[in-house]
Length: 352
Image 1 (tube, rainbow, N blue to C red):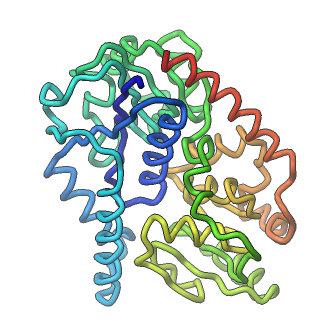
Image 2: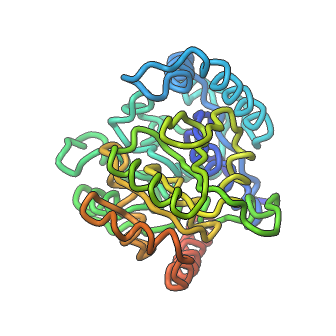
């Protein structure tokens, strides 16, 4: 069985980061690859990650009563991390200490985002110092990095990659403009390999609640979601973060609990990329709103799967009833199925 290391952000206290790492590892295993997540370690990154997990709403302060809930959430993530297929640990700043692999897959997640608050500027994610025969990327993204920002000295490092794929149009443009090549556009691992989550999913009727995933929603969106949910008789339940405008809070949910929570919901309202992804996986009606940090990712995902009408603005808020009160159009699932074929073809070729 061929062996591969996966280099990504697998220890973030973030549902999407955890699941994209797990889905890619288990997805590659289903394709006959012995895949492990490269266990890069950094005290600096850990401190930043845990600080953010305890105070996710900055500059708004975390209420004292929420600290134990966020701490419980972190412990649940640690428990889930322990079950991942992990390599021998090595320092993030010293990849020479890692084991050697015939192939390393970089991605998914914002591995090339130089503006990431603690991983940005780590050369290892651009292939620097990796001990391997070949490097490929899968569903990598530049995140909030704009095309106009200087990539000199960084983009050239990507020429060592034998195959490059990205998960959004924004990243595709950056690669095309800086390297003069056309990368493959592929699905996020959660959408590409949903069987990992579906295996633990309970079959049956959806529960009567609206899942709220994200934070710092604009007031007009809060009001519209509350109004619609109230008219329909559904409680709004916020998972992972406090949203005081929701009816209930489930702050301390772990990664597996999050996946089941979305699969059981009636509909989803979100401003997070993976809020949209999990709604699509479970074919749930959903409404999303853009935020500055995530606008590239969400906008491009919606364009990619042809679900642009699920992105709302203050001007389009009257359509909330239409998109949350009806099943997802079959054209979206058909488009995702087509993209799975493309993504699978890319992986089959890149893994050879």
